[in-house]
Length: 302
Image (cartoon, rainbow, N blue to C red; front, top):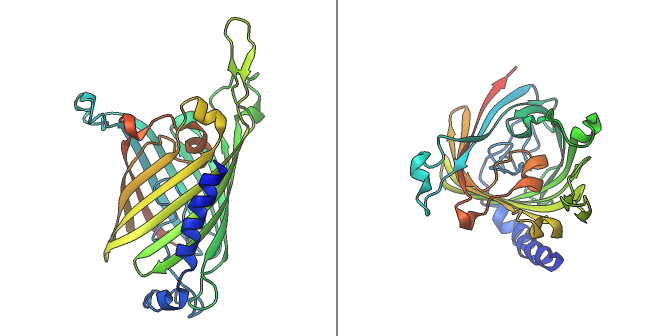
């Protein structure tokens, strides 16, 4: 598993740093009028892709209202999808969120998801900007705290309802039409259910409170207002591999329409926040486990 991560990282990192002088010449004039002329802006067009956070934050005194929706499994190959309109009858998950820019670099947000009734708060701080010359990457820190009002089996203690995400976002705008990210991620859950023998309550296998994952994301422009996007999270867990949990993979199309950024996507993850999709993705792409989804955001300035 570690060899796999090292190999993936070695493939991606040279992509980010290769031929910076020549590539930056192709970036054009997309710059933030309030920042240094050398700063590379608009690495991504939204604060999230499909499952992955992007390097972007909402601007100061700007509110991003976002609706994220996951339908049910499409069931195309086995023919079951025609009975549920290919998953459109089933709302697997829905999340409403508000993200506000305290500064151009610091964003706070809240959200509520259908699965586990997660109520989450988050913070993203962009502490490094890519420059036309000298600095080939941008970097940000993201933290998320989620509360699940759903009762647990562990004495119903409040602390057992809590989970946390810490994430480093490293991104680079390779050219005018290509942006890439690496996202090392840690998810901590205060309570996890172990695998227990129902006959004698003997613990057969210990679940993991801490999960490490490595995310990859990319945006590839097709036209001025349309891009192909994808993200993938490799979860480092032998327990998950042994009990039919899978890595979250999403592909989709991003469309800019005035004040909206709209994503139409396919993903095997019903979970929307990291606290959910990293530990709990149970569907596999190869078994019709993919589902249609969309993200839509509307930005308001104050």
